Length: 260
Length: 243
Image (cartoon, rainbow over all chains, first blue to last red; front, side, top):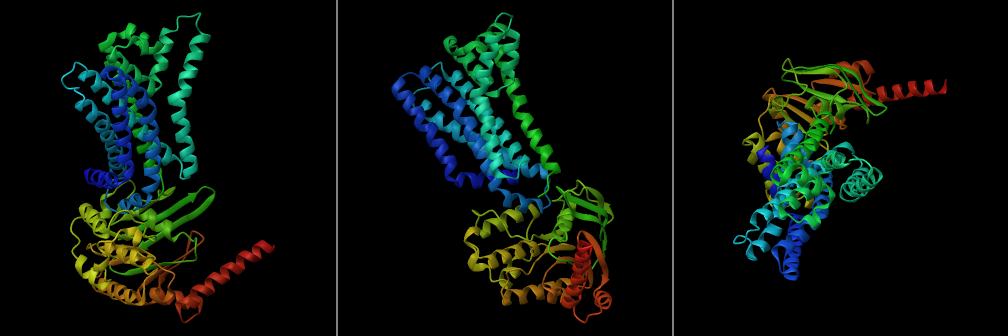
């Protein structure tokens, strides 16, 4: 698996897209820091950008990468290599390089701005963790979807639908359901629902740490009240880990039955 | 060396393999022949584990291969389409495969035969179809394996490369390697094959020595014999349709 990971990384570092991804986060961080003139506010703005852009790019890039690696996969399948190792190597290479682009993209400006000396370093760390989780989760989704459909158009369509749903539509449905059931004690329902969306979970994770109650939103507030900041974070990280593992198990299962 | 028992595969509504039983003997060359769409490539891909058969079993050296991967160490496979990762250079591609399989002992010898040295620094996407096929041959034959599985090995080769390829196969035959090959070039099959498996619509129509196939069809060369069988079959089908 390590050899495949190596070549996958090698190939990705040469492609322009990883560099563009890095530059986008790099520039955005500078802009937020320059105009906000405050680490804390800069992080809050970056969080919102992370929650939308990281899943979108991981999804798109994952689907494109999988369909474009068809030849690579065929070549490797004829070699004495386990199927699982081929797809795990490719997946880890892609999610790893995107995570690196993200972490360096926002890390460098904040470091230069004086992050290490400030008390914000741990909050910043939670933002990086959330971004990396989202990268691995949505790259996993992308692999699962493209393994499911040989037709690129279908693959792209479903990937975009899943992203739209997780990033926007889910929140709307969430609010509506809370409104409809406002006569009842909905806290438990709210907590349950927030586990079902990794984007929501990541927001809660960072917000708990940033301690911006105004931005916590309903779920965050309930989370904090229910679990307290520390166990709330542990629980959301565990749930995110489950979210990261599920699509991987899914695409490994599919890959075992697939014809190439 | 290699055996399939009642191998079946269907893609959607299409039955591609309808119960294939073949035995490939050790140390000889077997040609798998048949018209387009008769299931040749699907059969080879099933043997390699790229296609998962619906039912049936494949045995390599007496062991079932289903779900295994180690046995591929002993197989050199030449895929039909030489689609390689486009952004890699030829030298990088060779290194990648060597990284997985170990050093390719015959690499330099094959590079001379197919005159590949000038292409080493080029990216795959800039190579012509014939040169890609030469790279394909190099990647297959640079390793010493007891079994070679070749899917349309001669497609796109120029006469010089074709000559080199023939000599290569003949020398492998002398070393008593087992070779399984599909080709549409009947002259090539006639020259290198000891045995023939003839597939027709996903079933084994004939299996045996080359000369027996000729006798069976009542023809003196393979091209005519195959054409004769295919036309007979075609005639049978159209009769059925007419009725």
